[in-house]
Image (cartoon, rainbow, N blue to C red):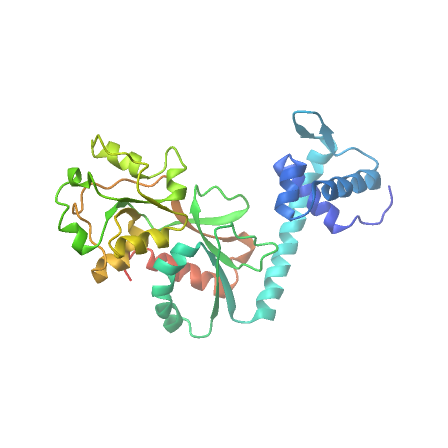
Length: 302
């Protein structure tokens, strides 16, 4: 072993492998090949003259030496991220990059952005719409709105946007729907990702809650983006099972209606969260958007 520090790349890969206990998962997280990760880990092990992982066919374990230094490595990278965020905030001035999934950007965020602009005219926004989780380390993302379980290690996570899920359709179609039983013979509109989850807030679960038999919950039209499903409902193509967060504006504008009134709704399995690095707590533009979004979260319609 020498007094020379090993490359930060190798230390970063060590931290990722140790956290995931997987070379493959670390490679995917860091956008490199598993072979590249293995090479960097071997470099570290050669540098320090000790093994860092116990490899077996079924699992990967930290050696005692690796487990002892891992907290310090994490603290070091946390401090580096803090420096990076502060310097980036200074370099980028008032530009704030917000990561959000496309349907929420279209149906909830964009209709409200004029209020943010009036409240914070000095902050320029960049909206990065993606279904992928925000990569705060590599993606240049300042703050994100995520839809999921809320379990996001090493990040500040704030619950946001309580919602329910219920049927919606065009006003013209609603004239034929007085009771849930009237769904028989109607086209059901589906968000594919909800169908793929056994416990998802989908038509199968809704029909069960409504005690309706004889309707196939898998029939109808499927969409890989909820915004398309909502638009299909607006255009009268069928009845959609939609989130209150995503259709609040369309309900207020009269483009959609709830054919069965305020009853017959179910709770989703996931929730929305405002998420950002803990090291960004002192960055004014991040906290400004956080506070604004949380305030807006109390109002369902634009």
